[in-house]
Length: 439
Image (cartoon, rainbow, N blue to C red; front, top):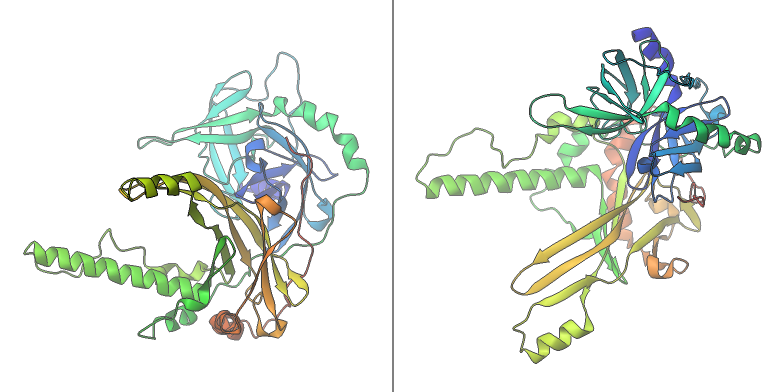
């Protein structure tokens, strides 16, 4: 099976969308990629990543929400070692796998690494297969291979409970074959762009740079927070996040010590559940990226305010978001910095207190950028935020020079550690992969 894995992993890609990622696989030599419909649903951004250094835009060819299958198209030439996965042929009255047969899948659970997972088919149904193959977030849409290395289905969902491995559901490949045949002609024209999109730096942020953030007695958080129009803006860097987690850990330990003292217990040096994981032990995987989160502001409705005024403030305020986030652009002078990941996350709130009711949902922006995306070399640097209610006219926030310098200084340790390698300029592109064929 190890030889099959080495070969067949080159048919698998990570499918990236605004809200996260799943898996997919090439089904022919023209760049058609099969995945689950729920992986790509409602996303204006589609990209596929073959390995840590190679990511390109993808286009949606077709999708079927009832069967939970979707077909993408990407320029296969961008991935030198890519191959098409062999698909089981549909034969009337026959199935490509038997109950009790060993199977395996290759996908991207929890990360962008391709992982091999094995199991046994426990039940063969008309449209689905049930198996004990462990399917985690990120596995959805990946291929399920039989023992001969032929695709028999798409890994779709996992149900876990108790101490056992749980049950995984797999869409049978027979349900996807008609869609593949019906859309082959669409790939006879000009292929999507082969231009590589920005990826996360392969080198992690150095530990000494994170520890340096713990040296000051007081930390100035002001450069990372700002607002404009109907939005709050939060920037984060690895040193800033490291300092934040350390302060939370110390606060948790202080609260525990105070509680033990109040209860008449002696303090101890053991770790507690209140304390977060030790970040130093996990810093080897800390990504050298800039994150920008944009959150809509909330306000009280007109009639809610009138009602509270009439009741002399005895009724709670009814709060709603002012708008929704649609997209943003980070500008270096007059050039756009292409994001590594343009995330758009739906968030729902149901909060009721004596003074306020806050029941609403909105989209938040959560974009990540290369470590040199915010730079004093840009001259003026600004963020253009497009709200959903007016998606063509942005709200503009010009970064204060102190914010730009603070973010740039935060990455000094990373630049020093990477000095032996060539330093690449920020990737400048147009917004990537807009999808018009929505289902």
